[in-house]
Amino acid sequence: MPHLRASTLTRRTFLSSAAAGVAASVLPLHAVAAEIPLPRDYRLRPGPGTVRLVPAPWNETDAWTYSGTVPGPEIRVRQGDRLRIVVENGLAEETTVHWHGIRTPNAMDGVPHLTQKPIAAGDTFVYEFDAVDAGTFWYHPHQRSAEQVGRGLYGPLIVEEAEPIRVDRDVTWMLDDWRLTRTAAISDDFGGRHDMMHNGRVGNTVTINGRVPESFSVRKGERIRLRLINAANARIFALDFAGHEPAVVALDGQPVTPHAPDGGLVVLGPAMRVDLVLDLTGVAGGRASVVDRFYEGLEYRLVDLAYGSEPLRQRAPDWSLALPANPLAEPDAANAVRHEVAFNGGMMGQMVMQEMGGSMGGDDTSGGMMGNMAPMRGMMHGDGIWFVNGVAAEGHILEPMLTLERGKSYVLAMTNATAWHHPIHLHGHSFRVIARNGRPTRYREWQDTVLMAPREKVEIAFVADNPGDWMFHCHILEHQASGMMGVIRIA
Ligand code: C2O
Ligand code: CU
Image (cartoon, rainbow, N blue to C red; front, side):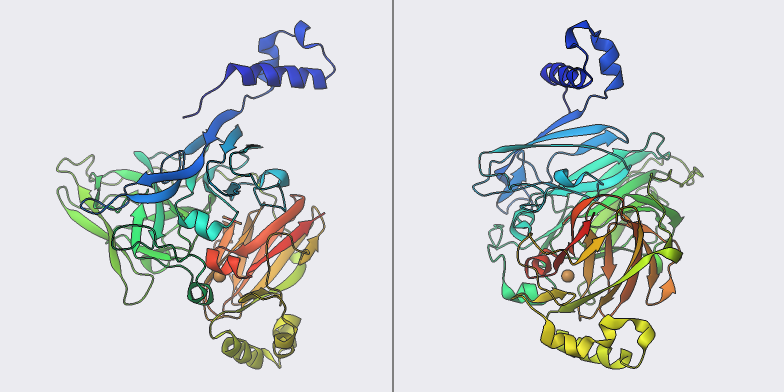
């Protein structure tokens, strides 16, 4: 997939030499090439296509694809590489590409109107940025994303460590959830009010890498690094690996102290990633079902791990699980400036607000936002269904809800005053999740998308070190489209 083109080399060499005030002709080519790393070139063409999501005898499905496939082509580079991605819009409408979780410069973030002009049908836009962090990331449109992502536009973006941990296989499972009709067509009821007010567009067909999976072949004794990416509009997963004991080694691309998932379930809200080290400890020739248990009473078998008859080794290897840290600035939580963020709205929102406002009313250490819950009801504005600090966003050009000073540490104390889960995503940064419901977290994990349970309070901390206007929103795409979005300015 990646290909270097001679024209790129020549042009870049010339431009950089010229910028340095040196005549390009007198400089030996190889000397310049050694100083300026060549970008890894990719080409993505969003456009209509036909894919086989469900096996025959069902029909193939008309979808929107990147370069003809769902997921789109895997972009895979080394940490420190420069990426150059030419996006040629083959859709009949505007689009952009957002590199979810990658700390790009603001102009490369792919947010329509806010960071770039949307790419018109037939037009081309070139994204170029450095892969500063190693880890598991992904890309997707940010224009009308509920429908564009929902129709199949997404792909994996893997940045390899210079020295990755040792495993037998490095595997990516990009999970998605589709709402298909009886003929395996994508149901075109995007933007439905019921989905917006409740838990989003939860579908009826779950795919791994664009296919309803039957089984996944493994061998006894094998060690797999399993990169899970949730590309669904709304479905939350809680995966039970059937007696296996996976270790969580990274969240949202960022290394975390290796640990067993809480309650044995690997939970991923929309847009979240989990890297697991999975030791295949079952019996040769055996089978084990990976089950999704997130929605009570709606458990289903996602896929079977099918063991071959020949073991690879008798027991799990004892290789290290610890990934090297990424170059993230450590927030100074003790001296950080604190801001309260309240999420409101949705079905039963009034009830939850009353209940939380009531129970917090007498507690002035809890901060103004919750104490002021009752008056806030009258203050909310916007036509949306969901509100961030009383405002329902319409479109991407918004007055910043917060303006932060570049280089300073901040804590956002977030309250989910709704009856629903929300995966909250901040662009351009990774943040530490430092507390949940007032209790410090065990691993102070770095994330870019944090799943908040109904009524939960979550505190995150980060250094505002990437200047620009950054989206801050729920990644249930129907919630985002109906107001649950804001802009944080770093100046
Ligand atoms: Cu993955 Cu603002 O998005
Ligand atoms: Cu939400």
